[in-house]
Amino acid sequence: MKYRKLGGSGLEVSEIGLGTNNFGQRLDFESSDRVISQCIDSGINLIDTSNSYGATLSEEYIGRSLVGRRDGVVLATKVSSRMAEGPNQAGNSRIHIMDQIDASLARLQTDYIDLYQIHWWDDNTPIEETLRALDDLVRDGKIRYFGCSNFSSWQVCESVWTSRSVGINSFVSVQPHYSMMERSIESELLPFCQKYDVGVLPYYPLANGFLTGKYRRGENIPEGTRLGVNDRGMFTEENFDLIEKLDSFSSKREKTVLDLAFAWLLARDEISSVIAGATSAEQVVSNAATAEFVLTKEEYNEVSSILA
Ligand SMILES: NC(=O)c1ccc[n+]([C@@H]2O[C@H](COP(=O)([O-])OP(=O)(O)OC[C@H]3O[C@@H](n4cnc5c(N)ncnc54)[C@H](OP(=O)(O)O)[C@@H]3O)[C@@H](O)[C@H]2O)c1
Image (cartoon, rainbow, N blue to C red):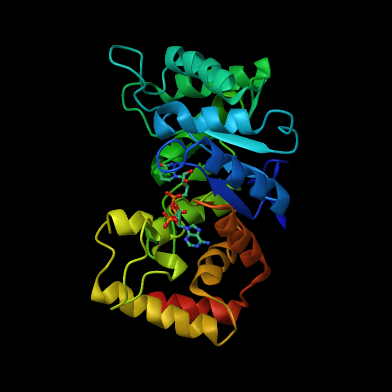
């Protein structure tokens, strides 16, 4: 496994990470535990979750699984989602963040979170209040770094400049939707992250499994898979055309579309880690192995023209 710095911070994360929104939903504790064990065996150190995944079960399963082996794991979780009815039970206010960090630490059975991420922008809380709360958590030792997710470029920019102007810690990472099939962050957010040295952790990097190449035109849909349950509008002629072109590019190099889905993202320096979800240890093994495929500049451009 290879490791990269998370943006301008000193934190090293594995190029292939693990997303855990399947934990507590499609995966029970035993299956989640097997996925985590395989990650550790494969050198994957970054595990991404949220206080809301699996209605809190994702954090709970990760905490149980990491008992006695938390060291060396970079734990990333999130706050913002509504956690209960009533005031102060959602968003990015100081009161909600201070409540939720303790709840996450308890479920994760740890004293600190490595990367605490704001899940969504909150129109009802001044960003300075949010950033000061996060900065206080760093000083208290409850979190080590913080980042954000689903922020637009101007929102990340406003946040970074607010931290700078009041002299406190700042976001080290963003977590946006990004893959070969969803490239809207390329126009504004990626150039911003490059200029300001903010690490990028793409979510849905495999387009919910479509970019693994396991769904093919005219073939039976594999049972028990995420898109087999709900195709999320992915099974179109145009998308199958794209998969066939990507497959042709990859197989000429004795690689798969799955290898390419990771390699294409990792070809850009701004990407720190690709946090793919996995439902079995076997998937983790395949995903970890993709890190061996490194695209040349010419290959990257060739794939980009296929995607265009
Ligand atoms: N910040 C946010 O708002 C946000 C939103 C969404 C996700 N996320 C984070 O990003 C992570 C990644 O996104 P995601 O997991 O939703 O989607 P994804 O990584 O695009 O797709 C994951 C799915 O692909 C399939 N898969 C993975 N590896 C495979 C392999 N080697 N062979 C065959 N199939 C494979 C699995 O589904 P099946 O086995 O069921 O087919 C898996 O559940 C999440 O887990 C979560 O941590 C964040």
